[in-house]
Length: 198
Image (tube, rainbow, N blue to C red; front, side, top):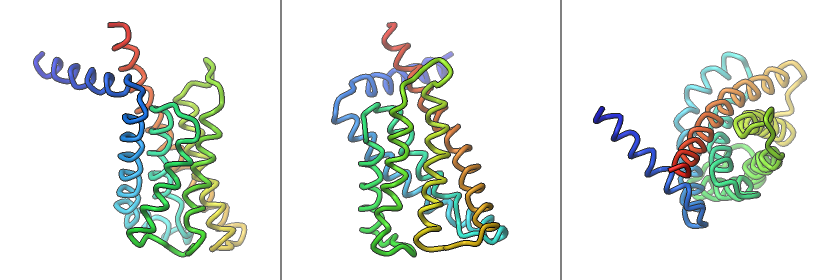
């Protein structure tokens, strides 16, 4: 009973923070999600590389996890074009810590393009069959595939078979991360609604 009360109080506190809907709270959420996305990508890379090496493709997994945080922030703050802003922030942060990768000077576009894709999907009006969770799911899939396509066009130039595997891997990992993003966003929305009812 005591634990349930503590959990309810924590959830209420989180809901109040999100309910402020102020620019400051949204900026805090965006910064935290940007940092989390970069850290998770760096942490997952070694495990992701084991899978991609076995499939003889260059990547497509860790990017989906990084993009998940852009989707979460976009869904929670409900501000237009914030995923694009976050993509730019991630690019600057990655450059500052030396995460340039094989794209060199074009690396910022690798972060910006998926951010724009997330924004475009999240701008679609919500309907009963097209909830915020569904939008988060689709946004993560499409942005992951767009990031993989951009990487292939600029760097990898894969033949059709490995390219298909590469894009499928990006789509599957995007779907998993999109589902998780949707769960988080809907939980926050539920907490907001409960707070408003009180």
